[in-house]
Length: 183
Image (cartoon, rainbow, N blue to C red; front, side, top):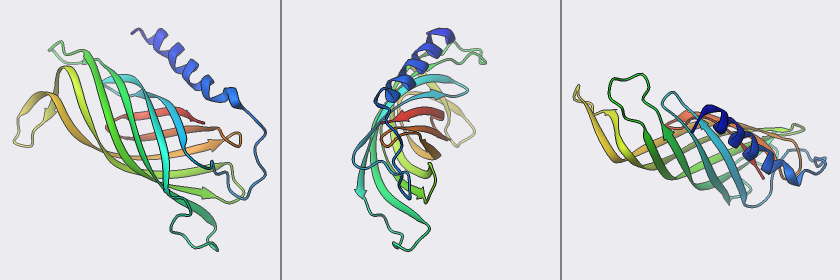
């Protein structure tokens, strides 16, 4: 996939979530209620990709007291990413495609009187690759695998531009930088 085609795909994906635009609600906290699908693009040193997540609140009222200056919730997030690998900087030609189903937990924090929310995210992903991917084994050696698991550690923010839609920005391991739309 060429960078131009990928850019067009990413722009179309972001525009998809904005099709249900409505005026933002005048709430104390910009909070999207219920189950939230998200589409996103992945940008990393070794790959570009696209993905889909579904955020399912499991503790909708969160852990913070009602008198706290923000609202919170805990959500479980199953999803998947399709990654297009490019080891352009290495001698071995290890380009390929990876499919990465995943599950993580997000702790969403909603600021009062703000269109922004933030969240840490922890979880794990399984990677299924078409070519061996180099990784550090811990014994001073570099090896390769076609299937492996990896931890997800990320931090993100959302700008809530309507009652149901938000621009999502996330950075972390192993997916790099993600830009998406929650709707």
